[in-house]
Image 1 (cartoon, rainbow, N blue to C red):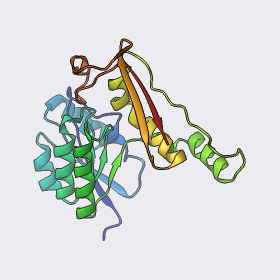
Image 2: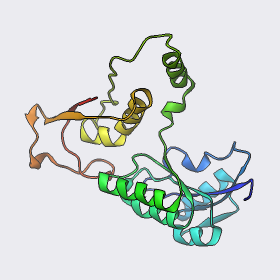
Image 3: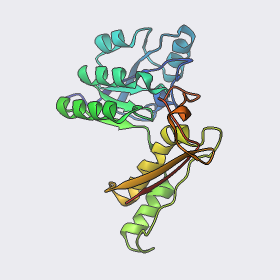
Length: 226
């Protein structure tokens, strides 16, 4: 087994782009060689190639997987409409995956990815970097050492901007869910109440968000987990 891993990235300029720099995540890792980028947009592809120093660039990410046979692939687009196909293709090609959040826009697609990763013996990591911040790691160390007592409750909220409600939950809420699991473990049960303009949710409230992360509804979501 080689001591150096071959990494590549898939982006979609204008349609989710490269997420929050997932294609540049390998530059400071000594045992990773970044070999290729794929982007159907010619200008975006050229820019990503320059940013990463990749030796090769492809308009077709499927061709990249076949030709380069990478060990690790960043699935970079923020938009989730492409994640299932891209991630499963990478896993089937024998690559581990680093995927921009949210991983998928529904649970069934997420379950399919997890099942395929297990069956292929490959790993899928989602870009929830928040738990690796030094201050977050420090808080958990204090908890584990019993220096600040035990967690009694965790309160979390999103940015509460124009995306407040369903879009905020799927786009940014995954960071919060991951952070809560980091401190409190897996959820045993949950309940939630969703409203739109103070009214009980109705099918007419379902809408397409500003980014294609799946249908959303509600401008206020109160959720409780234990």
